[in-house]
Length: 65
Image 1 (cartoon, one colour):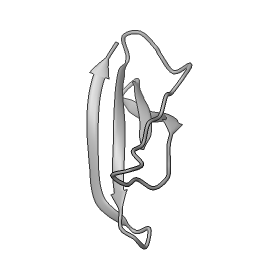
Image 2 (tube, helix red, strand yellow):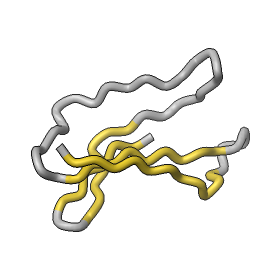
Image 3 (cartoon, one colour):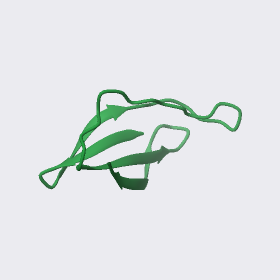
Image 4 (cartoon, helix red, strand yellow):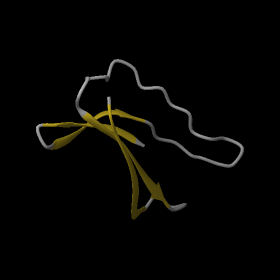
């Protein structure tokens, strides 16, 4: 999972979280000191198979503060 900020049309990663997820162990992550008013943010989530190979499947959620 990557927290990204759009600065001048370029998406820059400002925080990351890696690890395994299960139904009994969800991923909660707090990112601090990344807020910039008026710039678009997104969370990018990429899924991997059991061998660690990327599945070329990413989900994005966008917002602006």
